[in-house]
Image 1 (cartoon, rainbow, N blue to C red):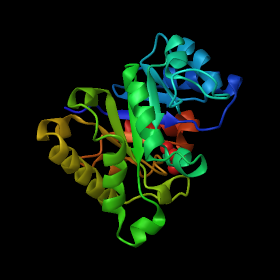
Image 2: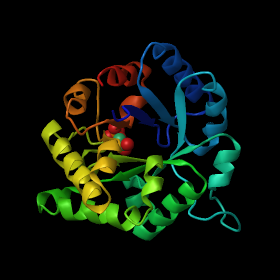
Image 3: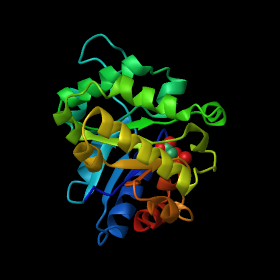
Image 4: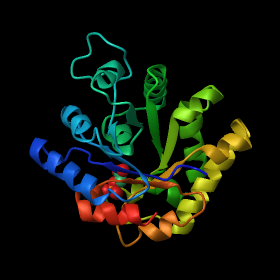
Length: 249
Ligand code: PGA
């Protein structure tokens, strides 16, 4: 059985007080829920989030990390800094990092290798832009994204990897992939892993869907056989919406 996982990507939202409040709400409302739950606050809120979630089942994810180990990289945050405050999980390759901050395949590959070298768990995001979908080019784009940044990895490292399919045209737009569109890509990706590694590995990897998941569409997406959970942006900032989504899995 693959792990079912829901992660809230808080992006550049919330501050010290509102983040603490949201964490308390999520903890109290998820006490009896048996799903793997994660939250990804901004860097400055991670330390407090680790402390606040210590006795709960909530896992804390960083939204990013540096591709470099240490040194003269003003403004960067390293894997070992994250580990030193107890953050063992990181999101890499979010489309906002790719498009706004120009993170290309080689940067992402370095980030993944760096995180794995530090034994961190990685949620690796991939997904096509609207023009790729319209031109029917999306299978090619997605396989390139995965091949360029991940398929060099030794098979043993894949137990630290979770994938997240996030069609760029569905992120923050209110437009969601249909359950069939999500399933099509998730099963395509599972086949790619099977071709490049093995069927056994492809069956073990959790593949999350992200892009305008809301309480009213979560269940239909999560019911698809290759969808193992979600990476939730906007709706994760409201504890009731987030819990409804978690309960939909
Ligand atoms: P959204 O964001 O749910 O607000 O569309 C998803 C994401 O970017 O991870």
